[in-house]
Structures are given as structure tokens and as C-alpha cells.
Image 1: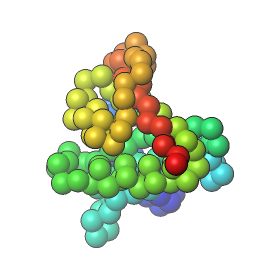
Image 2: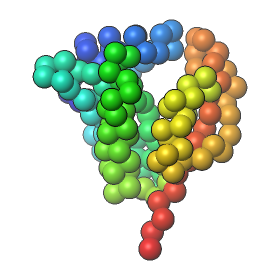
Image 3: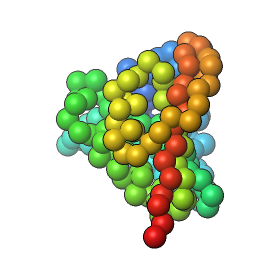
Image 4: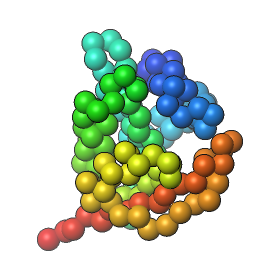
Length: 143
């Protein structure tokens, strides 16, 4: 993801997550933290159809965000984005955490298929909607 992608990413953010959207300033701040952040976009030609972000430290990583335009959901784009984020996370950290909307069962199922398990809930996490978050965790098995 580059700063030039922000207009398209913000449009997707609004489509997918309103009213609980990230702002342009939040994305700019994330993109500036190249030591611990890793963001990518999925493109179809010149159109951004999805995006995702990772926050990674030596002891744990967090899937910060992931989204795919509604008209392209079900095509595996989200799974490919997640797989790229997890590959990068595995290079940096033994544990990956994420929060997902409690009402987003499709995303929770994708995460379960990638080895995540529910470890808790955060009541009213998403603001301003007040939607709960499911906290999920995946540990890398090192042999």
C-alpha cells in the first residue's frame, strides 16, 4: 500500500466498515511506521479491490485490518490477503492476534480455517457503532 492508494482504500473502508472507519490520518500514520507495519492492496487492473495491514513486533503481531469490496467477496481475495499478512507475521513473530466484528461470521470462519481460535471478546470495541469484537489468536508452531 502506498499513499497514492489511500483514496481507493478509504472508499473501501467506508463501503465496508461505516460508521467504524479508519481516517486518512490513521492510514498515513500506519504507513509511516515502516519498522513495525506492513500494508498491502489487492488490485484488479488499476482498481483497488482489497487491502490489509499488519502490525508486527518480535513477540507478537496483529492483523490490523483487512477488507475486500463487497462485489468481489467470495472470490478468495481476502484469503490471499490474509495469507500474505500471515506469511509476513510468521517471519517476525510467533503469535498473531486480531479482532473481528462479532457479527462477521464469514470472516471468523476464514480466520478459524487459518488456525485462529477465539480467546475473548471486547464489548463495544468498534466505535461509534458499539459492536463487540471477537479476539482471536494463532500461534506459529516452531519445530
